[in-house]
Length: 357
Ligand SMILES: NC(=O)c1ccc[n+]([C@@H]2O[C@H](COP(=O)([O-])OP(=O)(O)OC[C@H]3O[C@@H](n4cnc5c(N)ncnc54)[C@H](O)[C@@H]3O)[C@@H](O)[C@H]2O)c1
Image (spheres, rainbow, N blue to C red):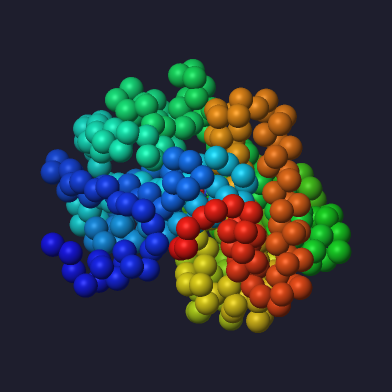
């Protein structure tokens, strides 16, 4: 039965449909959120994550699918926004190796029922090998392994896009794209964050890293000789550029007053906890590279290689151009005296027909 809270969730979302089911074996709820099919079938990652309640998983899927509509629009993909969430029961903990296959089979059946209205891709805790597994049961996925004919991991192109976003942000904020001597805090050094650290170090930046996974911090610190900071202190660390590459919601009413950076540019999806946080950053004079632009390299990877049949070099060029898109966003925000997220959203909606979110 739908509660008043659920109804509110749907009203505020503005999307097209949610397909859902329950997996008895694991206690997981699954949601496929199709925000928009105006530009083409919806597409977006398949997130496997533990949530305190199924409603939290649904809320996450809805918000992420809306951001995917903007991401698809801003980079010209012939796709709409969607997101799938496999919401594990946090009280039961992670799924065992033996449970993972049946769980993904259940998900593949839900995916098949949509008959191509939504295409999945790797996201948190799912990778190209999972896409191979799902594809064998339901063909609506991007980014299978290269051995199985897919475009493989999006990591490097996402990291390239974030790096180019940092260069464009530096140009706008500091008047130069040079990162030599610039201090950068990278929050979250998983797949994308670690690849970004390599690029930043090679560009001469003074990098500080932070992650809840201590082994990842130790490995990267040893590899690149970078400093580290405790996870709870990362956002408030004095630096030129803060790069959130961990989870969403890191820019909020509590953290924004504590930021000690000039620029925020990172890979994490949905960095703003609420729409008001865009204005909060604007008021503090912090230049924010909207996440749905900065992290669009992964979309360009999958769409470029699999739909447009681009070469790697063509994808690289398109990803590098995300920096130019950001400069357009920053100029619009300055001219209209609005937050950069609002400016990017206006650009996405004006360029392309995206329904009200
Ligand atoms: N992989 C892609 O192509 C892609 C594309 C677009 C957006 N993103 C987004 O970028 C972010 C990173 O993606 P990824 O593929 O590197 O994920 P990942 O899971 O490989 O890495 C995330 C890292 O963040 C760390 N982390 C989690 N909570 C943290 C905290 N509170 N403080 C510090 N570290 C914390 C984790 O330990 C992990 O090392 C995610 O938000 C993802 O949704 C990724």
